[in-house]
Image (cartoon, rainbow, N blue to C red; front, side, top):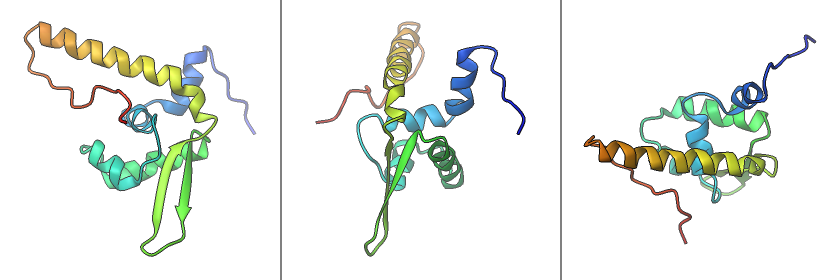
Length: 122
């Protein structure tokens, strides 16, 4: 097997969580398990096919855990794995910066809306 060489740590990070959808999925899973349909509602612009693909990749990399409940109808939930929880600080910083950026854009008069403030729902 060929050795994978990373030139800088962030390259290894982006290899696992990079792309348009993975950070968004992970930020949605920060505070608890969600069913794929819940994720789809929270990320309306992602296709079902892409959501499934990204979740499978995150599961393969042991960032998310998939729990199957054997019931009728079948139920599946995804959550951050113990290893995935090691990304909590990174995800919080990304989400906080996004909120700061939206406020910056609003001050510039841009028409932007942030539906979720990123705070844990009680």
